Length: 140
Image 1 (cartoon, rainbow, N blue to C red):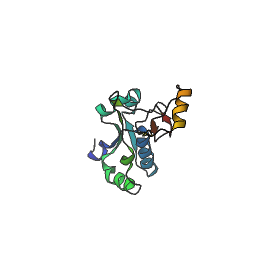
Image 2 (spheres, rainbow, N blue to C red):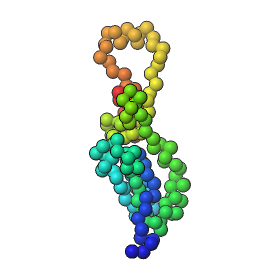
Image 3 (cartoon, helix red, strand yellow):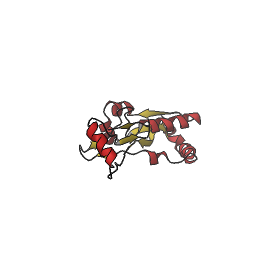
Image 4 (cartoon, rainbow, N blue to C red):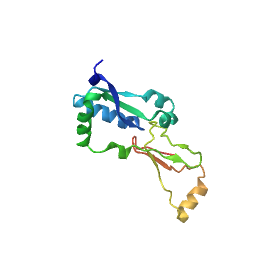
């Protein structure tokens, strides 16, 4: 095996969609690559931290070219984050797409009289307090 045939981890992501975006950008520019650990994290998203995220693997000889390609398109790691639910002390995972790219929607502390009345009339009304940036869904 030649040293330039060595497969290395180019980058790791906590969000499978971002990993696939990077993979497709690299492949579109002629870089052979693949995703590792996606199935492990897909089966149990809480393993994400333990396995080090979803990895984009490339040949060692292509590392510099990969950096050049992604440098022209901005840093995707800004979008790659996770939230921890303070009540359960676990990662918040979107129930629609299994992404951890979610944010807590701040609830208004100043409820009006009308809002208070509506909550009394319909106590089963759920308030959505999480938003997923990947699928744009709100959930509780």
